[in-house]
Amino acid sequence: MKSNVKVRALVIVGVILICVYGIIGLPTSKQELIDNWNKNIRLGLDLKGGSQLTLQVQLQDAFKAQADQVILRLKEALQKAGVPFADMGRNDPQSIADADKIEIDIKGVPSTQAGTFRQIVQENFSNDWILTPVNATDYRMTMQPTAALKLKDDTLTQSIQTIDKKINALGLSETSVQKRGGSANEAEIMVQLPGVDDPAHVKQLLKTQAVLELDEVKAGSFSSREEARASTGGILPLDEKIVPTQPRGGAPSEFYIVSRTPVITGRDLRDARPQQGQMGGWETAFVVAQGDAARRFEQFTGSHIGKQLAIVLDNFIMSAPSIKGKIADNGVIEGLSSHEEAADLALNLRAGSLPAGVEVLQEWTVGPSLGSDSIKEGMAAGVAGVLAVIAVMLIYYKRSGINATLALILNAIILIAALSYFGATLTLPGIAGVILTIGMAVDSNVLIFERIREELRAGKAVVAAVDAGFKKAFLTIIDTHVTTVVSCAILFLFGTGPVQGFAVTLVIGLIANLFTAVFVSRTIFDWELGMQKKAVTLSI
Image 1 (tube, helix red, strand yellow):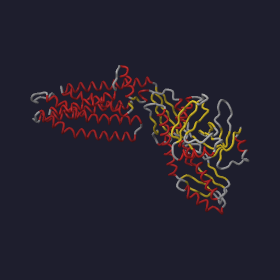
Image 2 (tube, helix red, strand yellow):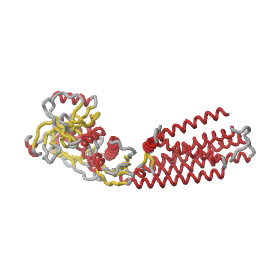
Image 3 (cartoon, rainbow, N blue to C red):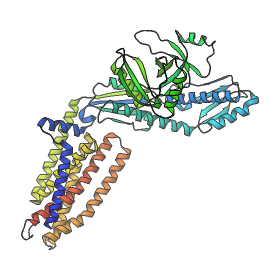
Image 4 (cartoon, helix red, strand yellow):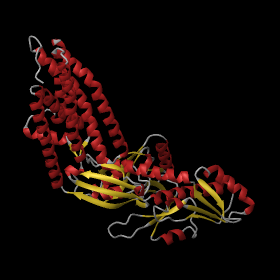
């Protein structure tokens, strides 16, 4: 019996040491202890202060881009099949509500080749688009409802993932990026930035789509778009487009004619980083991912030595350097004004491009004084609750109340350590979960103690009463904990960030409570009874 108690005591000591290490590490000074605590215990926006942004994803951009790709593919397919047409274009939805009303109009298809035209559309686009004849020579394509819904979901999901990557790359901690709840907010994303009181730089990064293309330069430069179009006789070939340079320092933009199909895009990059060029200016170096993209890039640069390659970012040419030799897997974007611009561009390229533009709808800043007041009031409520519980337990259960108190303190230590190890963020609802956990922990001890009292009143010996009390109360404790965990799971699945924080904190506390109320409390009772020559008394 004694050896069994020693083993369990060692387990408890081991758990305590692991928890303490997770909270404060191995500090060598008071300042290091404070630093470790602040580093490991992460505070949310409502406690630490910071900024909250509500972003609206411009879904119509994604629908326009999708329609543009279909138009390009359809033009190529018709050209290859020898089916002429007079004109092909799309409408221009200006709002999110009209995004799925995107339409593609095809005019001037000869009636003699209508069958071939329909077959091409059927084979290539029927899964996502509906073809409707307007008259004998004109047609309209509209998007399937299921395809439109999928495009909306994919656009929002990719936007959240890309924004999350950008924020994480900035080194900000305890951030939250999630879809804003409510059916009326289907295109809105809520971004929480604890500790950030001036989010201007972050907003600029988040609004940048960072769509990168490396395009072959066909002609240029020209002083105006009209001059560029005139150089081709006024009719621009289907596989070419006119792109302006990024205006800098008040200088007017120049215009280039570039290939519509890029050599590689930002999706083909493996890495990007800022660096200083040989002339002292800042630039962004990028590395192309191994595989098909690297082979395409190497073949293109090898066969176009002496020609220009346009580096296009968000429909502006950043630079158009001449190809001096075969390039296998890397390149440089030159002409950047500062280290910050080069670093931001590298970050955007690593995170990937946004599928649609985003607009800032709301910006909310919480001062750190509010967080400090919240922490003080939350701590005061928690301490008052703990002291009241301890007083009641000591008065009502006498020395056995010390058992419950020790279990309660260990429960709190395990809970805080778990938050640290899991990297969870403590919020005001989380503090509410901690306080509720205290009540649940006391409830478990009360169930056990009252059951032991009943067994003693029934005439059982002390050891037998303790054993029966723990065994009979165990199923009741499990039942109450399981029902609460199920409720927390529902809160986590359907709640927003603060509600999820409450649910996570409460579940961790419940799991810790099973360990402290059953394992630790039983060990303390066995140790107390083992210290007696004859286990005949129990202060309860």
